[in-house]
Amino acid sequence: MIDTIFHVVLVLAMPPLLLGVIGKTKAAFAGRVGAPFLQPYYDMGRLMQKGIVLSDSTTWIFRAGPVVTLAATLFAALLVPLGKHPAPVSFEGDMILFAYLFALGRFFTTTAALDTASSFEGMGAAREVSFSCLAEPTLFFALITLTRLSGTMSLTPMLQHVTLPVWMATGASLILLLAGLFVVLLAENCRIPFDDPNTHLELTMIHEVMVLDHSGPYFCCVLYGAALKLYLLGALFVNIALPFASGNAYVDWVVFAAGMLLLAVAIGVVESVMARLRLIRVPQLLVAALILTAFSLVLVVR
Image 1: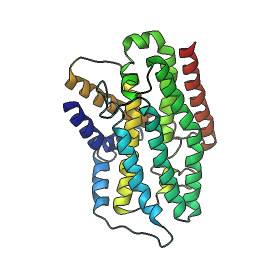
Image 2: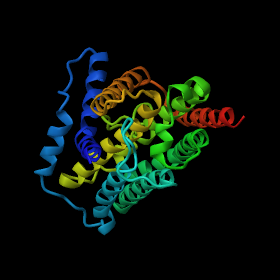
Image 3: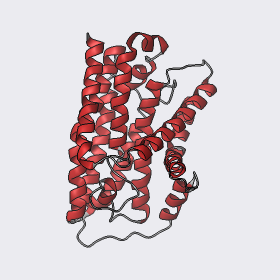
Image 4: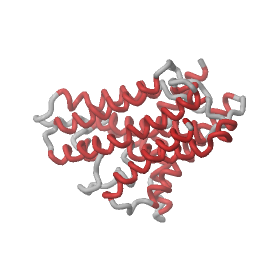
């Protein structure tokens, strides 16, 4: 019961903090002070107090997009174990449901963008779907590799199986898997070099251009859902990268939270370094991630 309470509290409260840490890290690299760590919380609070503006050309699909996407992501959060603690919901094959809950959210986000009848938002939706065609197979290769190692298709026993002895035996495969998974984390969350959340340049916008017409609480749902998705994919990465269990539940929670914050710093560093990567190189980067996770599976099967 205590584990479930901690799980829910972290899932609901911590995701926006990752965005604040990423922004602060990027500001430090640019020689600026940057916004406070809690700025994403302030922004979402202000959005919840604003009104909603709806275009006459939109239908119920536009209004359902942010709500369904957030609901699907929240349900996916119940399937992912945080650190060495089991997820509240776990069953055989839940890894497939986890992946397709993200796909459901993407479907409604892109459909809501198309519902605005804006060619600009349609362009962003097309880019989002194109990148997902390479990102989703990479994620599945990573999950299949973990399935091969653990002998189960459930996320909780699959990720808890990754321990120090497993790392000693299959370290090369897990390193390739983490490299591919990190690229997927950046692509699925529209981070640099795949997208720039802070820009308004037509050539570099993907996620932001799809939600330009959302406002008020709807836009708050979009921002929180994006932060939560980053948090969940980051939890997968941290569970594999930090296979340590102290035996003390509270210490394990602290280690996991610290690992998530370190991951946010790493994302900020990578975004600062790769900010000038040309957009035409992005598909090649996704293909490379797909190849890395495929090789990680080959090393495990061999």
